[in-house]
Image 1 (cartoon, rainbow, N blue to C red):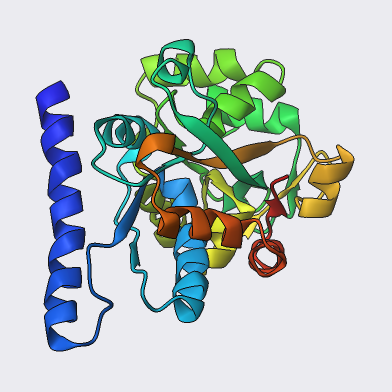
Image 2 (tube, rainbow, N blue to C red):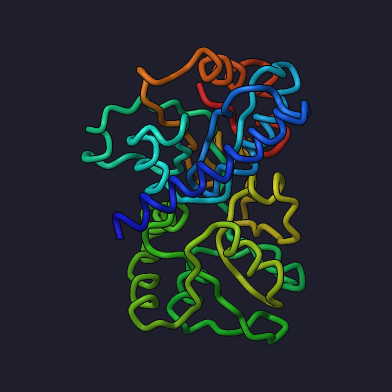
Length: 280
């Protein structure tokens, strides 16, 4: 599995470098290899928007953001020097922190319980959510069958639900052991499953819904709508932090300039307009 992960990481990086090299030869891309930022699918949409805005003002720098390799893939690739920035959506473990990374938090975002637009409900309670994952609540109010889409237990969103919703951990983990629901191992695939499946319910976040223009509906939770404002006030309970990880000794001047841009007023404006709370 470790060899497979390493091969996958380097394959993704090569895919990023080839278009940049071809474009440079044709005069349509800036010269030199791009900065590669890869990792958790949660981070991809907003990182691409930030990179696009940065490159408009810095045409000599190219930034590539390939498809998801997950937080674990980001940690491995960044540790090996295969990418400039790892994109992570959960805190690093003690072992991971020992790899010598600099961790630069750049945004916080509300995690949402989301449904297919055909679902009539506008909100859900903690207890209803637990009952759905336990398999005892199986229909919406209009009597359609509830189709549950889940992520694996190490997913950053489900880690937050397990820690913040009393009783959810037991219901969710029992449902996984019983193979009750379809499990997705990629954020984008999980989001598309909610989009394409009538009466589906799953977990996403406000930023992904906006940056990826997802046709899914976020539900109020215990009567509170998810938003940067309610998350900041603490009235909405579910959120996660997004961060760049990198090796300080390998960080180029272009990489430093990009990090400064993300923390700038313009970077903050991009984050706020897509449902994120800018990092400090």
